[in-house]
Length: 101
Length: 324
Image 1: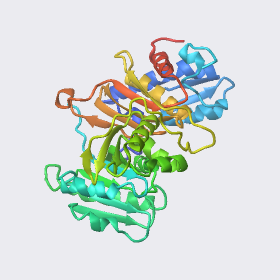
Image 2 (image 1 turned 120 degrees about the horizontal axis):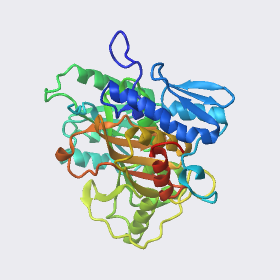
Image 3 (image 1 turned 90 degrees about the horizontal axis):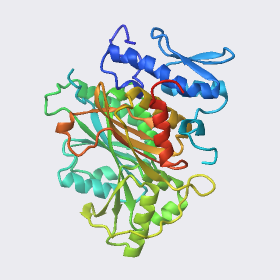
Image 4 (image 1 turned 135 degrees about the vertical axis):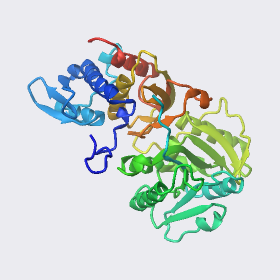
């Protein structure tokens, strides 16, 4: 989002958004982001939804609680708040390992 | 598409414990012509600046006295860097007088981590400053004793890209070897060089030497820190990589001390680096053929409390196409 007055982005881009070269990349990246999040969040009883229009991604619980996160750092903070524990990418469910690591 | 050129000022942080030889080393570098066009910012925790008198070789010198740039004087540092950025923005990019480099000599009590975080989180500086290198000076005579007692000494060593061990002519060779083994155990990713009064000096070999147990900063012994090289497979797209890394830093940020590497993206080659939980705004690098010596699509993760292979498997899971 640009500032209407100076043309600068309204906030410094999150580092995760640096890889997109143009608007097409950015919209593709948003849908891909939701897709990747939905490989991980359901294990914690959560889902992610991004309609590609409203800024941010919606993180929700199965019981209907939800919150909007503007970038990935916020996604993980919101997900931790909604599920009551941090989403650990090294969770045995994601590394195909056992519980003893 | 033409890749954008990195237009920000490069910041080199020179840190290290009290008395580790930061000013001596920096004075020698200036004398040898390094950082010739840089603005040198000296931060001293004490109210009366002294180091600036020793750094007469700098083309432009700024002093931040009366507080440490990682805590009380953080706002002063941010204000000073903003002023430099503002002054630079008024000069054309092709003008040789334009400032491209800043060297910050921190006080001996500063932890570089919060300084990096403060610059990263500043809405103005994020557009103007890119972190170059964190160089941490280590006192060859006293560092082992400091590391045993002072968690701050350990945090300084952990954040370094390069460790310069000073005063090695005055220290016994056995002690230097033990110090080197200890530094390598704390930060296996950092390059280690030796210096005597600022001049680079060869270091003894420390293979097979046992590291000392050092203060971890919390109760109980800390797990061993180790580096993991992660090759980013071409099948791993930038988005899934960022989802993965942001999750890792959120959940494991106290254990993942440093991430650094070059990743190819639709926007060009990005130099990515984090210091603890804070990721710098990625620096855009020139095309690979103009920038030899860097390996693309490889990142190094330095941390503890997990297995290196877990990182690989977890990243592959995040990046895999299709559902679970």
